[in-house]
View 1: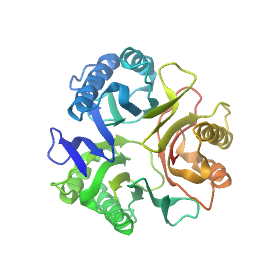
View 2: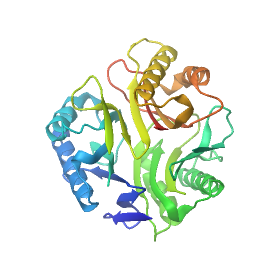
View 3: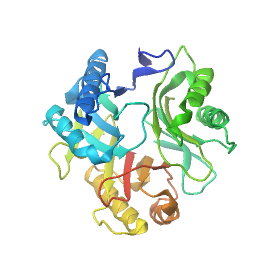
View 4: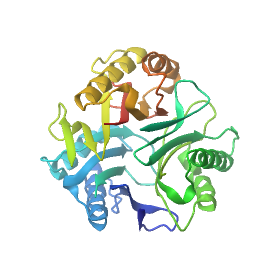
Length: 113
Length: 113
Length: 113
């Protein structure tokens, strides 16, 4: 049984639950020039997607952060460290990639449900 | 129990099934200059890998699309929208990365089995 | 139930086990100028993380290799081919991305536990 949580675009889900694991993706709704603010925005969207799937930050397993400017990774780390549940720390990887338009960050998270 | 579906290269599988989830990777066999045609080719290869693993498009959970030229993402979206099962939409992320040789697209998909 | 294996940084785990799957990430502790040596270093770190989680090379499901210089992928392949368990071959993808500082390779692996 697969549960799908639709997003803004008809051909993609913002989260999918299968075999007890939710996987979700988010960018920042706010296309600020600040990496710090976009990472905050993307993590807030992740929080909402986790909640909509019946789970939350403490149950995150992994986070893959796709970052459009690795020179600004310290800003990403600051937003991450303020947000993360330090009692339940995910595995995390940060990779420098090209993103669309004004996106500075895209984050894919898995969590148990 | 892990089931492995060998690929063209002896040291990598094109799909692996574990704990009820198949994960598969494909590029396009046709190294066309067209992003649209390569995405079609990669998605057809994904279809074959899913079928070989006993699953199919309706059971896809996630798709991560690694794209060698983000300026051509509209072509990727067109091929995706024509291919996707709109009754069962996956979570999808598209990331701009460097690929090998003439590859324009590489796609990693998970599906329930 | 989620089991987390802490890493060097307080806000990230180097491996997490959930629903029978361990996911782990590693770079090379040795920041050599050689892609071959860094891939060896990262794979040795993966071996340790797998062992710390009670699993090992034969149970790997997938490996995503993030490579900072795709022109040196042959060196990556050499280290991979020497290391991989040919009786139990993972699905593998290699993507060219930007990494931090002197990192040439970052690898994310999943394995059954």
